[in-house]
Amino acid sequence: MERQVLRIAVVGCGNIAGGYAKTLQPYTQIKLLGATDIDLTRAESFVAAYGGRVYPSLESILADEEVDLVLNLTIHHAHFRVIQQCLNANKDVFSEKPLALSTEEAQDLVALAHKKGRRLGCAPSTILGEAQQTAWKAIRDGLTGTARLAYAEVNWGRIESWHPAPGPFYEVGALFDVGVYPTTILTTIFGPARRVTSFGTLLYPDRTTREGIAFHIDTPDFVVAAIEFANGAIARLTTNFYVGHHSKQKGIEFHGDRGSLYLSDWQNFDAAVEFAEFNGTYQPIPYVKEPHAGPEWCRGLVDMAEAIADQRPQRITGEQAAHVVELLCAIKTSYEQGKPVEITSAFAQPEPMDWAL
Image: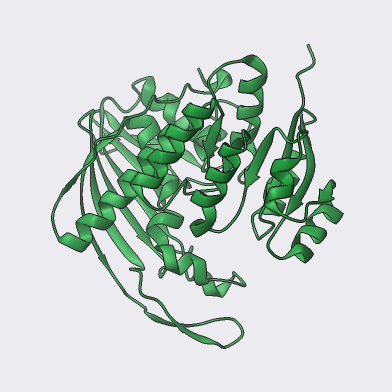
């Protein structure tokens, strides 16, 4: 049976927009109507490459009755305002991460989506990748025994070495920009977090762009946190914008009573997945499905489109995204105040992909 077509428009045509548009191309059940950006030349370049039309503003997207869903790819600080505006206009929303930059704003968006009867999803959706689903299935099936400890590493390098506009990344810091990836995977596998104890500092405050322009950062570029989950598991999370991708510390290790599972990368869907019995040697385990090469940025949006068509819950939800925001905010409060911080929100853990059951 042919699925109904989900008609979408993009707001924000920066670095990540091309990744979404390219990976969306095989999915005929999603139609790109167009895009807008505060710099309309970027929107013009985007639609020239991927189709649709240039909308002069977000308001013009929201006024278009043909648009079913807004794909929000704006900078971090704009997420709350843009999502709120879209929900109030009765549009479904899928947003880049994080959902918001405060617990209150994230929870307000979830409540608004419920009030309006709209779908709200938020990246990252990397837990839907083949490698990530393989690791999760192995843990669910008891390969590691009870998994009691995880080490999650985010050594994300120096943004100015590759991004043309590093400022917004440093304003939010590595914790909120890329800490959302492993924390979303960890909360999917372990469930809600309940308490954190953390430390944060500035390692390298004075930096230089590729054009040779000096700039200063004030948000900690190194944060390490101990996360306690409701199910009794513990995770150590390390995030920084200092150590490069060449670091040997990467991905997530899950340690259980019987052995350990290693996911070499929390972003790429073809990451290595390996298992070692206690005191044994790591060996690859087979993927549950042939993996997509690299990250498929649109996978959470595709799952939402299918969920709308099938009238089922989507796997990537605003509720979990809001819980992750509360977790990140608790980590920030902990390193600022020098004490443990409790986490109170909850969410329904997503279902595994059908092909990973």
